[in-house]
Amino acid sequence: MLISSIVRLTLGIKDHRVVSTTLGNNELQIHLDAKRGRKLPCAVCGRPCRAKDKIRERRWLHVSLWGIPVCLYYCPRRVRCPEHGIKVERVPWNIGKKPVSFPLITVLAFWSRMLAWDQVARLFHVSWNTVRSAVDAAIAYGRTCEQYQSVRFIGIDEISRKKGHVYHTQVYDLEGKRLLWTGAHRDKDSLRRFFAWWGEERTAAIEGVCCDMWQNYIDVIRERCGESVIVFDKFHIVRHLLEAVDKVRRMEIKAVGGVDAEALKGTRYIWLKNPWNLTDRQEARLTDLLKRNLRIVKAYLLKESFRKLWDYTRRAWAANYLKRWFWWATHSRIKPLRDFAWMLRRHEEAILAYFDLRIDNGSVEAMNNNAKAISHRARGYRSETTFSLAMIHGLGKLELPKCRHTF
Ligand SMILES: [Zn+2]
Image 1: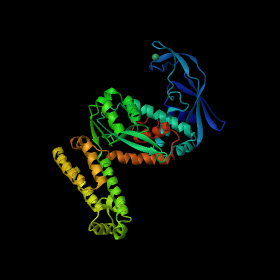
Image 2: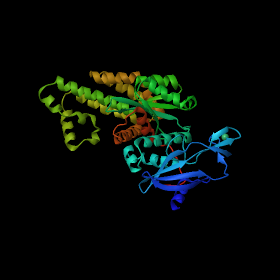
Image 3: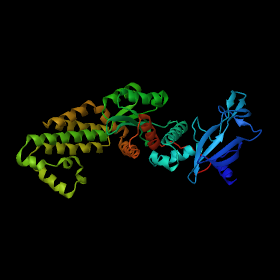
Image 4: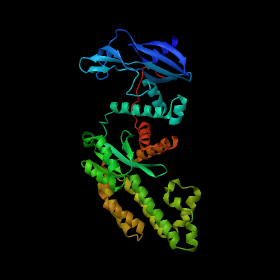
């Protein structure tokens, strides 16, 4: 009868009893029944109601014991609720229509935050699909606990899966450092789906949105969240600048010949890295390169001087500096940098908005790296929905369901 006690303990039941425990069919079969004369809670309102009759027997997979699969068998009762009429009882270890007990769901969901899903499946003798549905149920539970009422600043970024063949739009809570939503593609409809789910009330509470200069996103933010301030992420801006510098290097190698072209070989990271991150050897090469009369040198100096922009504490001073930098870049006679400068000019408002709100997607980048690890660990999720579940489960910081017994 020790096993019965363990089952009662792990399920935390009061109105039900263990009728029998048998070992058969390679599993430990636990048969349960409702205690005689007990009132049972209505599935809709939870009010204790008089039991009426039984329905068909159901089977739930429970947490395995010493590696032996454990299954619960029970015929749920129908109850007569004064408010809702004839309903099925609220079975304490049940969640939705899942053939898995509530404690098992919490255990699977807990471990699948840390391990690959197939490992969790092997560890608990369940199928991969069971793990998936446990994660699904845990997210549903977490979302009912979390109303997201305090979200003021969101960050939008994209992530690729299937080796860059499919993109996902990810929406983060910048203050809470958590993923709010993810959806396939990076077109207007993807972001519209986010706002549809997020709802009008919570959208009205958003004060700032940080993203890349990606027109699809900008259009939808203006359309759905017009009151908020758009801030272009400074890390993305710098990335565009680095791309421009790299373009100059490639053009230069083609344009110049002889010794200069030879000196430029393998210098990509010397130009792109922050100077304090260079190795001694790279530093020595840079010193040599800077003495040459090359356009890449000019581009490099412009890149380095751009960094100063972020040091300004006042928007007006930053605006002043940006104007000066614009003049230098547009008069440099280097096309990639001129193009970059004009792009800044077109988006000046959203770039300078940084100095009002001070939000960037720095934490998002870190989370996106984590996201890559999650995606990699599962060796590529088969479908979009599964990928989304894994992302929200791993990065959403949602509350996990709790059961009475800690496994
Ligand atoms: Zn009821």
